[in-house]
Length: 167
Image (cartoon, rainbow, N blue to C red; front, side, top):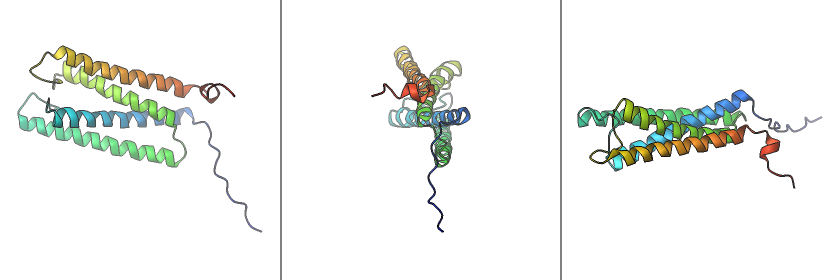
């Protein structure tokens, strides 16, 4: 007698712990991607600032390299954790998307307030009126956080309500 073919497991709604993990992993990847965009666009292509501008240009370049290293490690860790959750069938894509935006906005707002204003490690740009740059920088972070929060609320809704109207 032959054994019946194994059926794939029926997907179950993810537990609270797994949705939290999906959100955190998305946030890690989102923060790392935003750090990469900051590093590549504002530090390298536009050369507006370094991660640490309160010393010599060599120290500024070193600080950029350290930021780039941290961002790459965060991307590798984030995608490794993402792949593991996905392999186990425990990934919540909606919570991961929310986490991506929350992480991106969190990084942007942290950089704009803590790095730029509190620690003064660098500014967005030098030799210009900083107010428009600071407003745009922090507004972008707030918009990303707002999108992430809206996606998180939507992801937390029960499937029956978020599926839309019945046809």
